Length: 404
Image 1: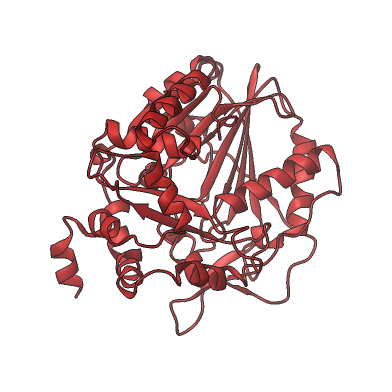
Image 2: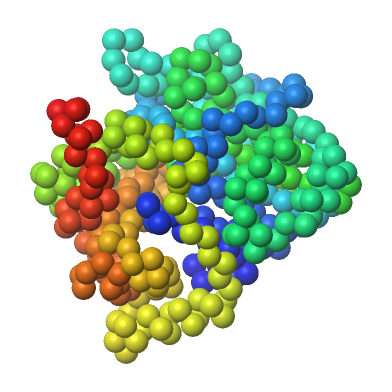
């Protein structure tokens, strides 16, 4: 994480404690920086108007599966989330035909990307099908000179301090995402979109994957395959299925108490959609922090004094503790990829294979230690009742009563 956060802006969501990064990198071809949206901010802005004033090419695989693919309950719980989207920025102009050809080969190996979501008759369950409209929209457009000049003026510091202005810039660029999952169900909304925006001095390449289809790891695997396919044609492969996700999820949650499991079931998705996702952006509390390598070293050194010399914890543990103390927070949460935590779940599995783990500082609100975070990780999210009570239900008693 320390390496990944070099020259990086970190956005801290003080309600959900999620991190998103803006990192400079030198990976090919001449990539200058990449940005990933904070999930709930994107949820609010996913309802904004998208500037779709150009017709896309539809990327379709040569053949489709003969069977539909049923989504898991974890996939369906992402119904109210927007697509998982990454914007990649490059100095210079991109080879769009070569990029499009590489992406076409990735879709050929992963035709689910070109499918659509429909409700399984007589149930609330969802599946990916391949009837009617299908394909991945691939948008190409030019950056207006004045807009390109403004875009070049953005820096990591500005991304951290002016996140809303940045979102508006993305809107003006005409980047098209898959949008919120609910808008895709039974409406033939695409599950994967690409936007290529080219200017005189820089280019933008955006990939968006429906959160119903998969999580951040799924999106990153598609992006990674595309990157490699561009350099090594024929290197892409088919992502593994989602069959083992629920079994792994249940295995990890087997240490939870009945109340803890019931609390999560009660909160998602109804209360989550009604309160968290439906908040007005003006009421969304967010603290943006710009951290450099020296900052991280200083933070970790300070947190070692709190935890005690010789304590073992990660840089991420130190950041969560430091921010928790700065914000006088009562609880914290972070998202954990289940891939690699059980033998039955392949590391290249497609789907939503993550959990959110909750914790509280042992010494009370605003008195965090990095060992509080390490304790939650070692317990694989168990013993989370105090945090769940505070995080999920504090202030929502009326809603709980109404919903019975």
